[in-house]
Image (tube, rainbow, N blue to C red; front, side):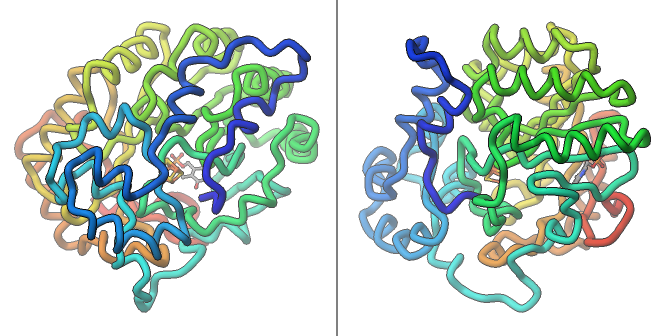
Length: 347
Ligand SMILES: *Cc1c(COP(=O)(O)O)cnc(C)c1O
Ligand code: SF4
């Protein structure tokens, strides 16, 4: 994650016209997000000491939470499962053996600045360091984002590598969150990827459809469905309370535009390490025509040890889900291990 809070320059990075069109609604949602723990505490009727203890953790990785996401939280409840995903806690400043800056081995997988290849046939672009929310457990919270290029011209080196490697069938836009970039830039990038004949699929990994659902607007659907590449959208919901009517509408727009939507969740202590919560999440997603793809074992990133759920507990939860849900609604429980040829299935 970026050390810098989101800057509006990012939204306008693709704009070269001297007369800028009005910023889209989703850009306003980024601009007005909560960044100050004291302000967030006041908005949720939480005691001032909550904001006090957040200060040190927030100085390393700032608070960032859009208002629409905060509106889905319960007031005056420090254990709210959405609040716990974004609120900086004193516990983040503790060191824990085995929790490190780059737990997933991104650095050795770098093809060229911004482009990672770990698995056959798929190349992933860290398209930006900006996100629309700062998840406290993020495995890329220490990623060296200033090294990430952020213009199509700067991406050319990686595009040339993909063009030279006929085994690449899929390009994954990730981040940060790629959907914090403006549509003009994304459309240009998509067109460049589509010009490479052997690439067939474009996958987007984004939390925007959940945290700022108005991001799924006409302009986005135009480039996502206007390409010859088969699109896939992978969203990130951890708890059913994240899904309100605005999220339902955004997911429906994607599905109805013919874009397969998958979800990945992270197993998080005190948030979704409960069979009722996970079962409700998976069922809500199935009702919304979203496939539960992965349940990730927490990546052991420094500052996130307090979120870890033991694998034995994760296995028990998956077993319990199998007893309650249709097979297609049960996610694959996986762990990422540096140097492996795929995410490792645990169940
Ligand atoms: C997770 C990941 C992928 C995608 O893996 P799938 O199992 O296909 O979802 C691709 N590239 C990198 C670098 C990844 O970390
Ligand atoms: S949206 Fe994804 S990349 Fe961004 S902070 Fe959350 S987990 Fe990390």
